[in-house]
Every structure is written in C-alpha cells, then in structure tokens.
Length: 254
Length: 317
Image 1 (cartoon, chains in turn blue, yellow):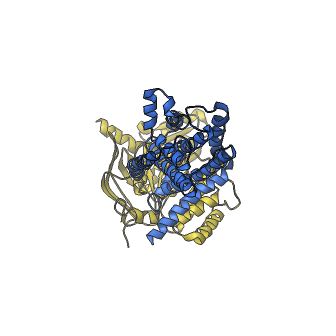
Image 2 (tube, chains in turn blue, yellow; image 1 turned 180 degrees about the horizontal axis):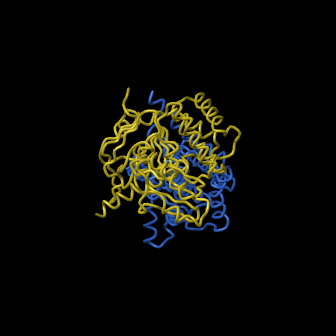
Image 3 (cartoon, rainbow over the protein chains, first blue to last red; image 1 turned 45 degrees about the horizontal axis):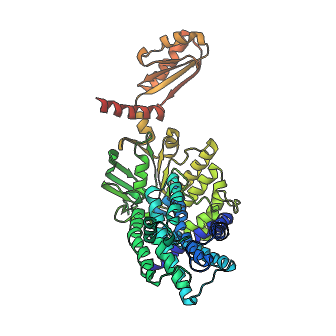
C-alpha cells in the first residue's frame, strides 16, 4: 500500500507543477523560446568560422542543446527557492505524504520541460539547416546523454536552493551559469583558443556531453572517445549532489 | 484511550547559542482549547513546529495524539492540522486546486479529495471563488482557506500559530468563529497568540511562555486571580470632586490610580462584596455622585505583564 501511496504522492506533486504551467503559459513559453533565440542569434548574428570543419550550424546545434541543459539549473533553483520561501512546503512536510515526493514532483516537471525544450530546439535547428546523420538509435542516445546532464543539473539546483535559498543568491547563480556555459566548446572549438583556455574548456563537464552528442549525431567536432566522459561526469555529479540534496531536504527541520 | 492530546515534558531546543526551549512542559487534555501566550521570541512558534513534526527537539518527551513526534512522525502527521503564521498554500493555484491537492496527499483518493474540497469551500464561504488564484485573495479569505486546508482530514489536534496576526477585526472575528465551531466537533486546539483578548475568548486553559519555559498555567480566571487583587473602578460625574472622592474611599491611598481624563478612580480590594458596599456608602455620605461603580478582575494584560515582568526581575536578581 505504501508503494501505491508513493506513486500517487509523486504524481500529485507532478500535477501541481503542471497546473503551474497552465496558470503561467507565458512564462513557460518564454523559457522554451529563450534557447531558440540564442540559437538563432549565434547561428546568424555571431556566425561561424571558429575552426570548425563543416557547416557551423551543425557544430552549433549540439552545443546549444547542451547549454540549454546546463541553464536548466537556474530554473530549478528559482522554483525550489520560491517554494521554500512560501509556507507551503511546511504544509507538505506536516502531512503523511511520502518523503521526497516534493522533490520528485519538481524533478519530473523540470525533466518534462527540458525534453520538450530539446525537441523544440532540434526542430528549429532542422529548419535552419542542421542535420543529424547518426540514425534514430544514435539520436535517442544523444537525447539520453543530454537529459542525463540535465538530471545532474537538476539536483545541483535543488541542493543550491536548499543550502542558500535566497533570491539574491539565485540571481548570482543566474549570472554565473553564463561564464560556465560559455567556458565550454558549445560555440567554439577549443583548438581555436589559447592553450590554457582550451584546456579549461576541455575539462568542463559540459564539453564532454557536447562532444559526445556531436559524435552520435555525426556532426563536426564529435569524438566517439568522449562518450565515456559524457556518461561519467553527470553520474559523478549525481552521486555527489543527489544524496546531498535529499539529505538536506530531510533535514529542513533540524 | 485517555492520554492527553499533547504531552510535553522537559523539551529543549537550541539554535546555536540560543536556548529556544529551555525545559518546556505542557499538557493539553483532549477536546480542549489551550492557549500558548507569550511575547515575541518566547518559544511559542518553536513549540508548535516541534509538535507538528517540522522541527526536531534536542531533548525531552514530546507526544501528540498518543504518538512520539520523533519516532512516529508519520502517525502524528495523520492526526494533526497546522495553521502556521504564514499562509501555507500554493499561491498560483485556486482554492479548490489547493484543497484537492492536500486531500490527495492525505490519501483520501481522487473522489474523496474532490468531495472534501467542495464541502470545505462551502463551509468557509469560499465556494464562489472559482478559478481565482490564491495570490489574489484578501487576507481574510487566505486565512480561511488556510484553515480549511488544515482541516482536510478532520484532525484530532489542530495547531494554530498566531492565527489572526495581520488580520483586520472582521477577519479576526471570522477566524474566532471557525475555531469555536471546531471545538464543538471535539478537536483539540493549541493556539499561540500575542493577543490576550484572543486567549481569553477562545482558550479553556492558558500557558504563559517566556524564554522557552512555561511560567504560569491555568484557566484564564485562575491566572487573573493569581495575578493579584480585584479592583473597584469608580467614575464620578463631576471632575472637580475627583480628589475628594479618592480621599473618602475607605482604602489605603497607596494602590489607588486616578485617571483624570476618564474621571475614574481605581483601587485594589480584597474583600469583594464588603468593599463594594463600603465604597457606595462612603460616596453617598460625602454626597458625591457616581456615574459608575464596578468591581472587576484584573485584565489578562495586567496578568501577562506581571508574570513575564516577575520572571525578568527574578533573572536580574
């Protein structure tokens, strides 16, 4: 019976997040359109030619997909912070519901939004000339790697919100994700950067995912050897931040 | 089962260097309203949060509805309702969505949750709020919905943490009426408040809390008696004769207060009826016309100041 309750509690909490979307369609839409705008800006305004073999749009789209997953951290942190600052989490915690259902609801909603965002972005990418060459299996594998990265970012976001859930700090994180996101190979190949910068960029966990996704999609800049790193980095982050976030949530009352 | 609804023995809770609870004891009998009265920072909210399983105490015994809050938190949660200081609602959703969500989380089932939400909205006069999100509710409506949310499962024990703080007199009256109707249904209520009037009106018993301990405990009447003598208030018609009236009263001048604006003399007395008769006689003999002569107990305000003031003096000494 308690397993059935757990499923029902998690579903109730997920429904809550979906009801929020229905209440604020504009906000959801802006969240989905923002990466599309970034893609178009970098594709057309900033333009290519950054030591890439092949069309720049083929290099750029996998990078943008990856960047969108990383930027998701900030959205998660904002939502959790908002919840904690209202009394509603107290009511949830004083109810006989399954431990962690609040977090599962958050996770399910954020993952769903990210999946929709990925599909939208690949659609727009296709419209501006990007092509995937790896076949359906490789395409799904690439989406899986991207969502794995998003899942790791999700728990970092929850943890940060629980540790430092103040609006000022959310703002700081909103700003800091930019340099972290750009210090990667999302837009430019590290080969074209000064040596030390290129090294830093190659060590960014985000770069591993972008490179592996490029490999799976048959896009320039891909190296199949990075597949392992693209799996290991997010799993390592999850191994650290998932238990930290869950523990921190359980200890809200101490 | 005859166990008290709430049983707290020697509860302690530290926040860093500060002792929020310093050996607090509390017993609340089933089906009664108990007031927890104290100044800001006395430990009232900490007590409620521990009782509602939101906060873990460091030491001491804490049982609610027959279960230990630390080892049987989930059992406690099935039996309690909580109305905190700030609305514990999802502000983006409407009233019905909130109540249905809480009903499902209390495992009433989809149909049960819908029925319960409808009944509660009706009962708290919120049935016609439609799809309006809670963030557009007035303060009083929000408080009523919050109270409805804490009653989704018909709790055995209901915690109300300063339920009327920030409400206008009308909103306050609405909450008081709701609390009274609940008690009729057998719910045990623990109410924290800074308003003495609120405790006096609603509570069967009151514990006065100061610095994490209960400094006095009893029925409102018993506390008033404890805090000192009854008083006789005399209002004279002619302000010019106020001093003369004060002089003819057969009581020592030491405790006498003279309020010139209200033309009122207030004196502490010990023998209630004899003092009243003597007062009337003395005024008659002096030929001073009184507008009002009244025997009254000290207000809870006076009790409260005395009790918390006493303790402060104790610490200083």
